[in-house]
Length: 162
Ligand code: SF4
Ligand code: SF4
Image (cartoon, rainbow, N blue to C red; front, side):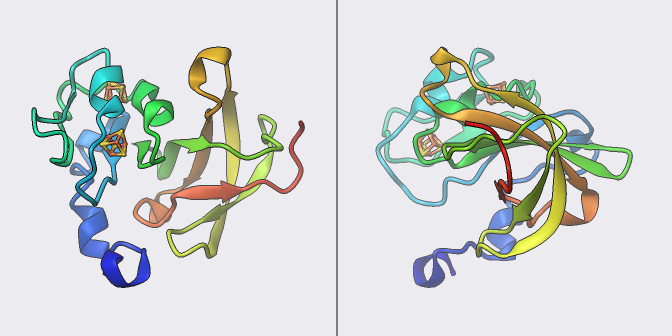
């Protein structure tokens, strides 16, 4: 699927997620579908949860037991291929990378989009992290209904601030 459309199949997406019990704690979801020579996800993780083998072309693997959901790998991945997801009370708390301006404001409602670029639901920005150490990639914390767990990937900011 991804070879033809650039959009991964539902099966490919599901293969990146742990079970929903595990997702009661925040976990990194790595959607790195291609073999590429890259490893900042591995080198940036302070908990040694991500492994890219000596052959740097091999896709990364993650040990969900070690992952704390801190989000550091999210803003170090040059491919914007990692997010953090957590299930709580029928909602998903997402941490996603964001490299556009304007950045949204905390409390703002944004359009949440799927991998095909379609708007699927409104989401609420619960936090915006953006410091000098973050490689010009902001970390947006977004809350959405659980029904969109496997579909949501990024957001469209409607207002925001520079
Ligand atoms: S979210 Fe944090 S603990 Fe989990 S893999 Fe990424 S850097 Fe490591
Ligand atoms: S840093 Fe990102 S693009 Fe590079 S191997 Fe890791 S997940 Fe894939």
